[in-house]
Image (cartoon, rainbow, N blue to C red; front, side, top):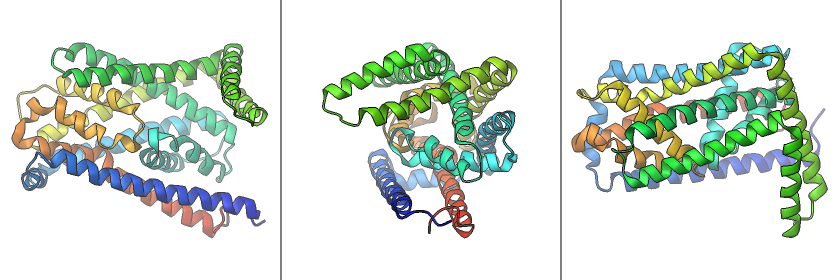
Length: 351
């Protein structure tokens, strides 16, 4: 059955918004490179980038593939536990789709909703998809907070005040996000009170569609409640999910060390570079920028300046972000468009 006219218009609106987000994202990258390299010798940075040791670069790329695989493994195992039928490679595809939309939308706001959308197109229950991603996000937040706080504490004497401030803001944002998730999952009564208070506030400021908003939130709360039931009855599965999420973030935080080795540098331990990256991620992950573009590069220049040195710093930030972000934005974009073409050919979405 062909989609209704209203549905086609909604899909067209979604893709127009996607195009706009990609355009803004591209502009941000251009501005980032202008501001990052305005005080750097761009030619020297490119030369450093091109002369990086191939083996270490490949190791960094392999670590990113492991990073995606850990998340895909979580999604795969959780959805299978819910009784859904899918392959690991389908879960990996959904992971890339989520990464792409997280990268090109402010505050990573589009990642999970569109990941769920594409899961439902492959006959996966929206409720199960939502629960799987909620549990995955909880695991990542736990890992980011634990590693980020420790990194901040052991490096506080080495960091600039602006980075410490960003780290504390990131700690608060990630902590609040985790608290909201946990309250939503484990305390339905308290969540309802918070929601009613929030609705009364927005009603005071003139928002009119209160009942529609209440219904939408109540549907989400039901899914949160189902997540709590799953966690209580599948404690081992939940613990393994948290463990894989911690491992996922450990893998990601190791990448700058291999960038360091790729540039032929010595003298700084893997632990020092690892925990600085944990601080960098916590400091920038809560910022309302697509893919933290601009912020990640600026903080990298600040915290790794002494470690990489003036001659290598420009090339280091270029290589690190290429391995851990830019290359995989392109890969995930290809996955998204190949999936759209496949779904259109099967008439699961409107042309």
